[in-house]
Image (cartoon, rainbow, N blue to C red; front, top):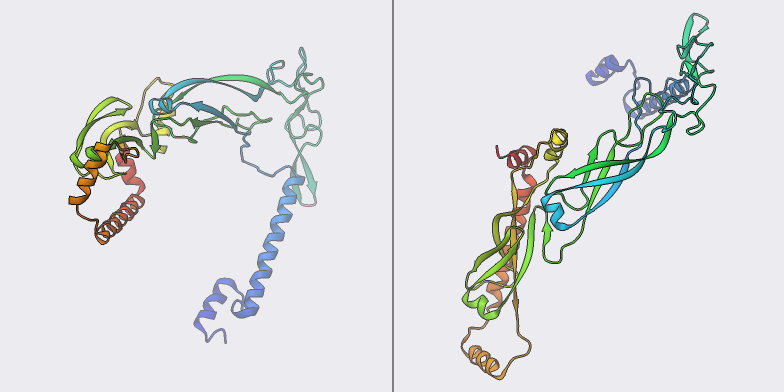
Length: 354
């Protein structure tokens, strides 16, 4: 039956298993999977026994997370701050030697300082970590009293951190190998700087844009006006066209906010030690949200004028404005889809202007 069925014959050629099809084949594969897991467990135990687990892998110390506060303007313009923190580093007394002052490590006599010993089991020779020195090749007869022979102690450190302009609340910056050190030949962890940006009473941030509000009267909205907008670059005159609606956004292009990107963060820290100041070259926009104030306490004269206006102004056609609102929503959805479809290469080009 297997030789007649081309698919079964191919399966047999690949696996050598005539039961690879059907329920029995499923059971056979499940059994084979279980055997594989058992083999993994056995070899895992084997590695633990002979101290081979993680062979060839470099262990890394724990990362340290430090939160720093930043004002809204600091996050926009960038700043430098000295950070104090504690981490595991070389013992301040023995300088990492693990030995008491005036002493030195003693070479292990069991392994002759190699850190491993050979055991013969039948035809096989197995290399195992020396049990006397735990694979170190030496042992400490007189350990340092400060670090108890670990070579590490918790010490206070300071780092001058340069925060690039344009960072957002909650963004983290990684400084490699400034975290906790680890015993043995491992590498230190990283220092993670998390920026917590305080809110501003006037400006708000929306992705890479700045949002502020400006309040105008009904007559200004109807007739148009000129307003003075407070920006991060100072005060700017801005024309408001007649017929502006409540909630409309007026865009002041390229006025604020250098954009801090994931591409940029890598280059920033590669060049930080060289004293090179970098930025992405791109800036966000400032949007002014128009808020129309409806008066609540009218004088007799104002009330009379509004009553006269009510006699001549056209009534609102609900259908027209409902249709317009639906069109605006649809346009907003399309813009969101376009932003999502922008691939990583386009973002890269946008950031670096190429």
